[in-house]
Amino acid sequence: MKIIDNTIYYTLSDVAIYCNRTSQTLMNWDKFSNQLEEQGRNRLIPKAKRVSNVRYYAEEEKDYIVKLSKSFPEGIMTQYNRARQGQRGKELQERADARQQQAKEEALNKVKRGKHNEW
Image: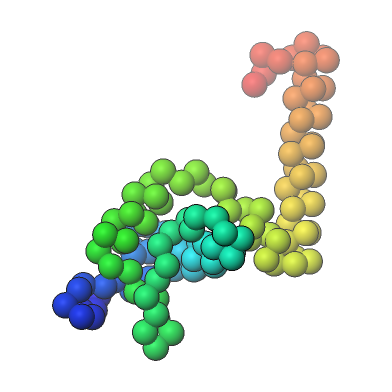
């Protein structure tokens, strides 16, 4: 927490603690918001005030981010994060797709065998 121009500001790490998320998650939300803004769309989270390369959020911005984090479905940023990771992200996505396909096939096989009550 820091006071700038008689306004209380919270660091990104402080806001992450209030949200029960990691600082890296909030940094990803900020980077994603920057991309949205470049595309002329609304930001996901408010733009941070940067002082000495530290991100700060005013109290009302912190409250907004905390509220958003509670309504944000888990995994919503998966595609964005994997795209940012390049080749590693592609490998992770391929493994996730393979697991999902395998689960579908197993469920279908249970139905075909008449054992759908095993679920």
